[in-house]
Amino acid sequence: MWSNGFSRRHLGKLAGWAALGLSTGSVKSADAQSRSSDHKSIAAFPADFRWGTATSSYQIEGAVNEDGRGPSIWDRFAHTPGKIADHSNGDVADDHYNRYKDDVQLMKALGTKTYRFSIAWPRVFPEGTGAPNPKGLDFYNRLLDELLANGIEPFATLYHWDLPQALQDRSGGWMSRDTAKAFADYSAYVSERLSDRVKHIFTINECSRLVQLGHGLGLDAPGLKLSQGELNQVRHHVALGHGLAVQAIRAYAKPGTKVGLAENMVNGIPAIETPANIRAAEIATRELNAGYLTVILEGKFTDAYLAQADAPKHTADDVSIISSPIDFVGLNVYTPDHYVLAADNSRGYTLAPFPASFPHMDAAWLRVGPEALYWAPRHASKIWGVKSIYITENGTSSTDQPAADGNIYDTDRVMYLRNYLLHLQRATSEGVPVAGYFLWSLIDNFEWMDGYQKRFGLYHVDFNTQRRTPKLSASFYREVIRQNAVV
Ligand code: GBH
Image 1 (cartoon, rainbow, N blue to C red):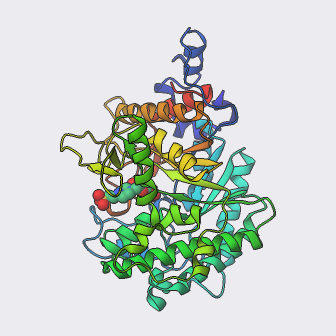
Image 2 (cartoon, rainbow, N blue to C red):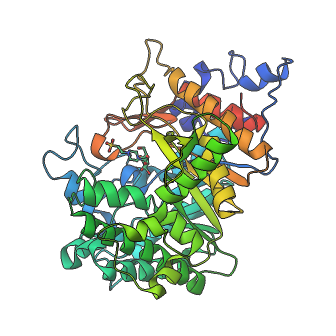
């Protein structure tokens, strides 16, 4: 059983497992429970399906001044009064930089065989470009060695929003093409040194959010509110940065390294599953992702995208860089973005407005629509013929807190995950090529503008003591993985 590999210290730390029925003590283990019952899930996943968890550097690492790390735009933004709901920042976060070995044991206790994390650019290049900081890269060397020693396959994201502040100061960050080039140089450097152990690399996490919330709405770093024309140009530079990074990784990484990106694809859900609405949802999804996935996977902007006022300035060469072939697509799926109906208009579809009563989890934006986890990968496969898909994020925040008995009964998260996974299983059972699923997130962490108030972890974190406690959802996920089926 899982506890065999644990030291006394770990068992003490993970005491919560026992009460949740997962240790070998007097409480009947989940394994024993499922063995002794006739109940068998019919919702099974493919035999080689990869189960994992996901995190990002600024959200968990802390240690912002250790070993020569340079400041990032998120340090600057979080320290600007009024930007973060609880006035917090990522200075300490989960202190993962110092506790990564314990955190790898948390992954192991879940039975996950894979892990998606991100690399902090300002640890590796404190000034964004120029002299590398070997001590910064060393942290990722240690992390990779620890993961592999524990049988966990690493998937690395190169950019999860923590741009070196120096690049913002020097050239306006993503407002400049220079940042796309700097990103390619950083990608080359990192992939050359880590690809002996990391076989799957994501260039950028959620182009759409870093552009829209960071540069349009001012809610994420760097907190800019640009005009539509400037915003379109930022979007173009981010897409270009992705493409240049793909080329850099192909040139510098070990042969066989697979490259993709992790995108919060805008998904159109057929409001009623008729052939006409399904077709309309595909048309809408292709159009709503024109600036990223559509151009990346098709090698051209849509006509409507180019027809908008202030369309980005670009060259034909830019477009071929952006659409450099990739090996897989990562999809971050949290919500149904739009319910779509076929319509007799020039676009061929209508987006239904959401009624105020539409249910959501512990955030207004986190609407519950489990079918999003069916339609997102199905659209990627149908619209663009993507042959390899990973669900790179899915999960929810919850107001979960320790109950009187010390356990954390996050039944809402379990409900959310179970229903989303049933729809993912629908996709894999129909042959949609989804190769793995990374649950967001391993541990409660710094949730950007919401600070520490929104908890997405399978493990609860007490941010005063850094103690990690498994929630009920950790038991749930462990059982899903053990059975390779929805439970
Ligand atoms: C992901 O984004 C991120 O990759 C991850 O770092 C994060 O922790 C996780 O989700 C949970 O949020 O404009 O205030 O109405 C998820 C996609 C899209 C969610 C934009 C928030 C806007 C909220 N995000 N959305 S708001």
